[in-house]
Amino acid sequence: MKTLYSLTFLLITFFLLSINNACTTPNPPKSETTCIDTNCEDYSSQQEAQRAYESDPECRNDLDHDSDGIACEHLNNETINDCPTTANCGCSGKSKSQCLQDPCCQWISEKGCRCN
Image 1: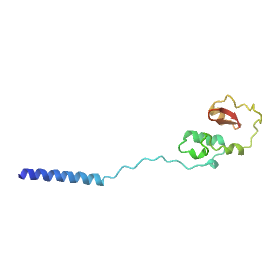
Image 2: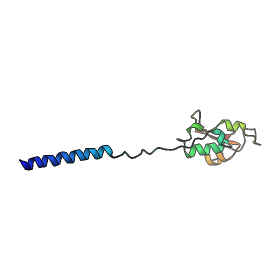
Image 3: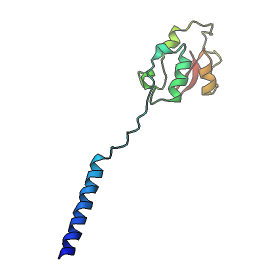
Image 4: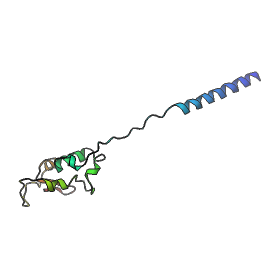
């Protein structure tokens, strides 16, 4: 009988210690994605904003207000450039990266490179 009490005591002690450890062990911190707060005014051109948006669309979704895949569209209208005003501005057929680097061109999702 004494052995049974000793065994029961040990089991209860072990159980209480394990509960105590579970309650006092801190939870590891949750990892969170940290986004740097930017807006269109932080970019000198639409192309620069577009590159930032495409490099991290989750963090830069505030650059695309109408969710059409084009960041800071209004910056195109503010840029003074010597781009041709005709339909043949030299943008058609350019790859996306070429298009984004040309201030006279604008990349439009599912349509390709178009005149700015």
